[in-house]
Image 1: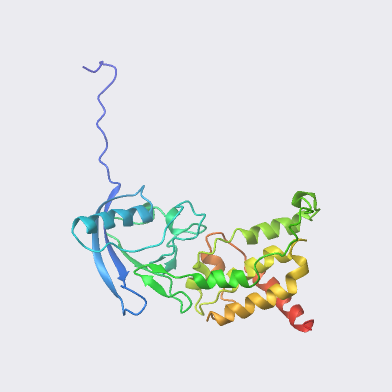
Image 2: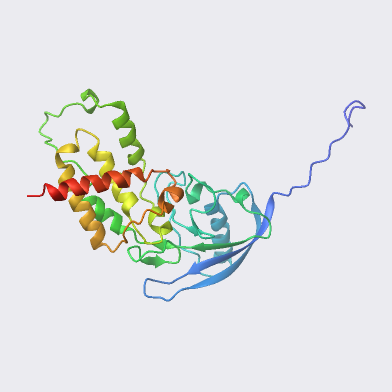
Length: 266
């Protein structure tokens, strides 16, 4: 029995659960035509991440004996860059500076219709449904995104090399690239310039990467072109959609590196 001085409080009605309609791209393989399929999803909590909401849908599909939706994910902390969904026409969905796994359902309203598609790029073929093959990024990285060092045991401690703080900060900003591919998906030309520029920039600014900076710029841009990515026309969409908010100023640095490398090429 409640004390007279403490009135009984009733729990407020929970308005945090939503009913949504998902229009999801289904494609059985790279050679399949593919189509949009509608899925109603009930009892979605606004505290769920977008991927948790897809987990709920997949659980429902499995229980109904249907094929679950394939989508990439790994760390679910915005670090690995695996989650790659085009949501309502935006890479990683509404919100800035976040990946799909960091997108929460509170960004949507009860009764919303949400379109979910994979990255659209000739260089990123669809594996199945929402999962795409981003091996093109790996090949660009392998072409020159590294430093060659002698590992004979005479290495100098990296922390013992003096580096101007502005250079170190700019290199670190470029190094935050997680290779998710949002820059390619959001670019009307399907360009991978922001990704390539970030990898070139982070190494060209540091002493360890400077000896190979010319060869690196030439090799990585050449590989990028081989993969079928489009050219950069400075629309700036990549910077807007990048979950790590990497600046297109790195693209300008890549242009300078490439120009100097071309002029001084033997």
